[in-house]
Amino acid sequence: MTSQQKRPNIVVILTDDHASHAISAYGSVVNRTPRIDEIAGAGVRLENCFCTNALCTPSRASILTGTYSHVNGVTTLETPIDASQPTFVSALREAGYRTGIVGKWHMGEGPGHDPEGFDYWAVLRDQGEYFDPQILTEDGVEIVPGYATDVITDLSLGWLESLAGEEPWCLLIHHKAPHRPWEPDEKHRGMYAQGQIPLPATFDDDYATRGSAAHRAAMRIADHLTLTDLKVAPPEGLTYEQAAVWKYQRYMEDYLACVASVDDNVGRVIDWLRERDVFDDTLLMYTSDQGFFLGDHGWFDKRFMYDESLRMPLVISCPSRIPARQEPMGQIVTNVDFAQTILDAAGVDPHPRMQGVSVWPQLTDDPDAPTRDAMYYRYFENDDINHHAFAHYGIRTERYKLIYFYNDGMGLPGSSGHTYPPEWELYDLEADPEELHNIYLDPAYLELREELKARLWRLQAELLDTPHPSQPAPERLAISAG
Figure 1 (cartoon, rainbow, N blue to C red):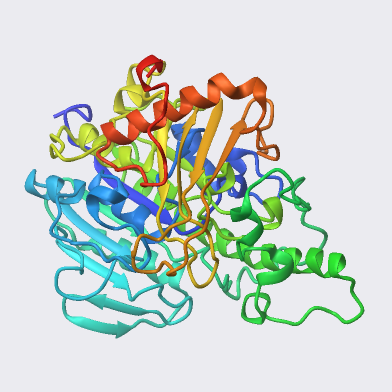
Figure 2 (figure 1 turned 30 degrees about the horizontal axis):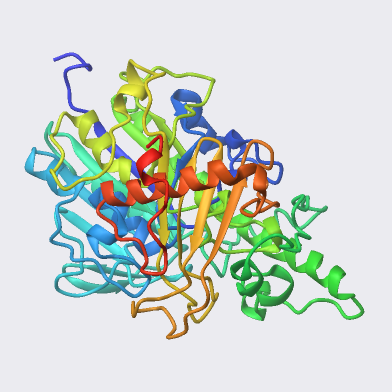
């Protein structure tokens, strides 16, 4: 058989909270990631990959099942997965793939919630520990000495080493890093301590045109980083503004050092594949479960539909099938699309309930083919105890973003019992890429605003989601361009 006839091996490296703007292939001005960049150089960088619910647990469920949160039932951090659902992994296994997952699962524990459809699984418990992590397998819990990013890679490569025979395999390598509280290993600790890490242009954003959600969110670097996050108290004698900048530097030093360890371990996987001459025939994907605020708008964390949180990094290589290209793929892609893309690459039919779009043709032989003209987002966990982010949904096209903050937890676990008056936001991403100017009330955008409301309503119906009761049916449904 030629390499074109073989089914590819599959490696999906998923990190937690790794913003694309902390990857040098995406133009990072704060760090370098040479090994992640190597995947992009051997394949394709996707510029407009977005998550459909910027929260760890729901995003992981959408990646695995190829469905939106309202379909797979994993809407908040407190809603565990029904692990018996069809996934791209279970489909691959039925088609003869050997399947494994190592690292962060974070979708519940115990019967019905532990990983299913895998020949091998060794996962962190809940968020997991950075040092000497507890590893759960079907045989129980073991504490494995070492640094989590190294341990997860060790176990992953150990499973691959154990495989005999010619059947293809699929391995999910799910890192904890660079999740809060950003604890680097000894090798990388302090590597960014010298010099000033550049402040983002929006660090001092005052949210002047935005609704109450941005004002109330407890994600401000100046106010909400804890002593556990910072590891050391700020020096005495700083003004409030100076202390905010100091906290940003501490936060970013540790965050970027955690990323550096991830990058090294991505390199270990690449080297393992190259040494065994299987790199060219392996579909290798590097991504994160969502984006992250790196001081943008003065924030850390995610949750919001603003682009720094919404945009996921995604670089993909498979040199025997995917031509390397310098220009990024610009079409809109979401985490719901991963499952069908992977199955398409393997020649396996997707489950009928999957809601994504395979972008395998765009990666391989039809790079200019359209994907979707708009993506749908919904964050359900209203007014959560830690960050107090408000529930919202919205639509993002290539140029515009319309967000409806319905501000109601609807009784979902993880939400508070409080509801707040709903609010709209609208952004022109071409004129205002940093989303500083909410133009919802601008009369010049009235026609567009009402058209986007109708498009959002139609998209929700297409994806089987239900608008919040507070949102009236758009008046222009009948004349929407759709």
